[in-house]
Length: 108
Ligand SMILES: N=c1c2ncn([C@@H]3O[C@H](COP(=O)(O)OP(=O)(O)OP(=O)(O)O)[C@@H](O)[C@H]3O)c2ncn1[C@@H]1O[C@H](COP(=O)(O)O)[C@@H](O)[C@H]1O
Image (cartoon, rainbow, N blue to C red; front, top):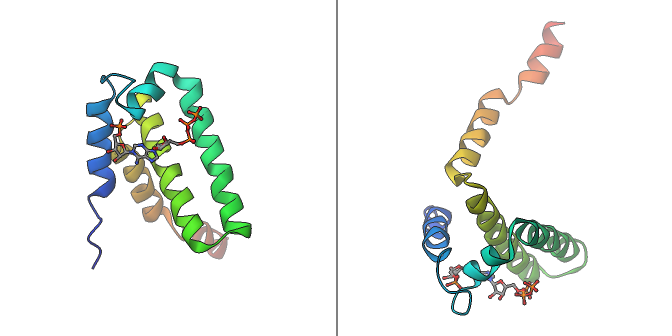
């Protein structure tokens, strides 16, 4: 059984707590001070690095880049006031919809 189910929720709380810290002592605060375009740019960079790791790197590199990507996505969502729970709810909603396209085409 996974022991990491609360990791992203915990990270979200840490990011919220660090946002108002000094940019000298906190990377999260530093990113927030730089503004939304910088946070969005970091998500793009980390996504690209994740793609490169997947195509030509080791799985260890892929794990590292994926962690960077998730972290920077959480920072961006936090800055936009979008809770991670909201994203999970959207995934749950889609899970409920899964197979609907197939069912619809079968009934045509
Ligand atoms: N998970 C992370 C995490 N992953 C990556 N990073 C930082 O992300 C940065 C990415 O490096 P880059 O070279 O891409 O960025 P950069 O050198 O700042 O360059 P720029 O692109 O910003 O110009 C590094 O400084 C990493 O330390 C993280 N910084 C913080 N966290 C988490 O956030 C928490 C709060 O961190 P602080 O805000 O620093 O207290 C920590 O306890 C961690 O749990």
